[in-house]
Length: 287
Image 1 (spheres, rainbow, N blue to C red):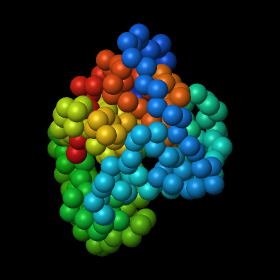
Image 2 (image 1 turned 180 degrees about the vertical axis):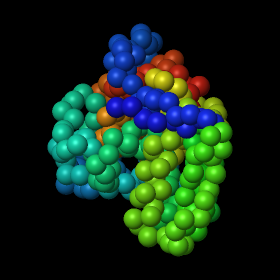
Image 3 (image 1 turned 30 degrees about the vertical axis):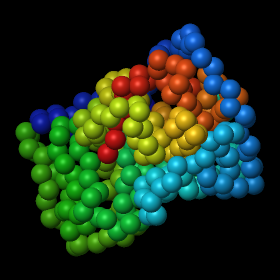
């Protein structure tokens, strides 16, 4: 499904994620195969942390209370075996893509795609923390959209070469307001704008909340939602994504090394192979 991008004087159609052939290409050859014990899965548990044990020899990283990392690690999950639901109610039946479904509503519009899911998780976290002044993302034309302005009753106006705020409603900060603000971001932001906002980091510094992202058309983005380390300080991590058409967030399987799924490792490959997209390690960015 196509999404809209604002430019200074016009709107054009833009694809945020893609179903092109890159997504399903075969993994490259590797010289090392990680062999940690298959992690135990607890199907009756309903958070990432509680449902998935770490591989043998690894333990979860210590994270600060009220951190974005703990927010992601404790994302609620639908019952084991549930299928991803698209915005129109249809089901995503690809068993070779995901192992669990995040239990968060996505609405009935074709908006909540890959970069949107990443931005949504960040916005939900900041909203829960009442850090409203930190909630902002840029449209693709570079216009910064602050939720603090939206709370004042201002709404976005596009006129000719100008994009600006205009006071049109009474100040408010309801859950309905926040949902409408998020939909505005989903509509006019995407992988291209998000990749410009994020800061590149080394793969050795990867942490929960970081994003693998390739901005453009096509483009894709996935987020690190959990992490564990062993005594050698080798990291494994868990990934989540949305895709197109708009769909619920899903915890990804590891297609290259299913014996350690849903955990991924850095060691053993020159790039990151996920079920629907391949990333270079240099594609890692952070807020």
